[in-house]
Length: 501
Ligand SMILES: Cc1cc2nc3c(=O)[nH]c(=O)nc-3n(C[C@H](O)[C@H](O)[C@H](O)COP(=O)(O)O)c2cc1C
Image (cartoon, rainbow, N blue to C red; front, side, top):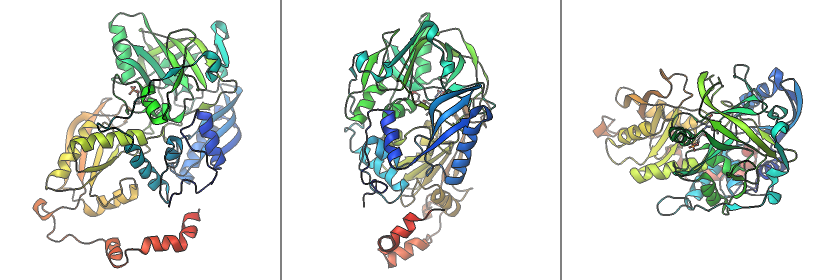
């Protein structure tokens, strides 16, 4: 049964022409909570997001739209959006995929399968060259601010946590161009430093970092950059994830997912091209002397380090729509972007290396874990695959390998499997040194750490497992009554699916 239409038979499907079209479509499903006013100087928006997600769960919580917000002593017009990508259901909606399934998880898995059918035989997504439009046809140019008219303190960029170093633009997509690599679009947080100054924070070895350091090493006085705010869901997902490699243009790959070219427009103060449909563009120059930045409450849910030296940008122009929408990422509280393209790409990559890898899932709302589902055919296979993925994927601090009957998108089921099938002494490998995610608070030095690989597959006798592996209760039920679950769904699905706490 296809049930992407379950909430509204007149649902509008993506890909959407802009962020605001996407938000409108979710609003039509009744899944945007509109909150009239919040005082963020008293951290009400942050408290609201914690309460909502604590009570409803990250995968069920709706989008929140704060219509007016007080920040830095001023009441400002929003909306400021929180949790824009929370539910898995929004992935098929945004990618325009006809997904099938009874619940959020199934819809997400179906989206992964559908997206996979669109890549070419080399696992590459079709790239579509962006097309340029005139500034009259670019919604992001409805208002242009130059010189003294520029004052980004008038916009609701907020301080999310009292321990943050200040207010942040934390969903900006930073666009850079380089003769060697082409264009890069990356989401890096930008601390608001003054009316015409922000910091720009590509972590070490991010593509943006490589671009900027190469320019610095070439002796260029500064880099021209544009920070795009409120891109459509697909451009935002490309900018926020390693779906593309260094030298691949995120806007071209986004065009492949969109099924049409991304429309771009020339900046006011540089030759850079930016997506025309966005809410706001902040243009500027990044010189190569550095300034302090941070700290910032990071995705692991811990406050990061204060950085004595970081990139910053002098703002040369701001253009925006008439009533721009802002997104604040309540980092460490909700999901940060639509993850299906990233997950699909990493699945394809690992399957090319190991044909018996069926799926790899790293839940970004609980960073640090990676669940690997395999069809095990020989004794050492699970550990070999687990070791390789744990060392090549920074987020996979705890890599758990499971058999093909386990749903890696079901956290509880994976934990249950570990409890039941894993023998710690027999099936664990600790890797002493590996790269680590920048925000991991347990790292002895930022960017480095260790790994554990847990082989939670059923151990065969030649791996020291039992001669006869016990059957599962569920397996026995289904052997006797193969149709029991679909029968229950047909008979009582309405009661079960409609139950809410
Ligand atoms: C809301 C959000 C904020 C992010 N902030 C940062 C950041 O400040 N620095 C960073 O290096 N990566 C950050 N990331 C992750 C990068 O966007 C991601 O790794 C992306 O692949 C970077 O682009 P690049 O691969 O072109 O370097 C953030 C992601 C999201 C979704």
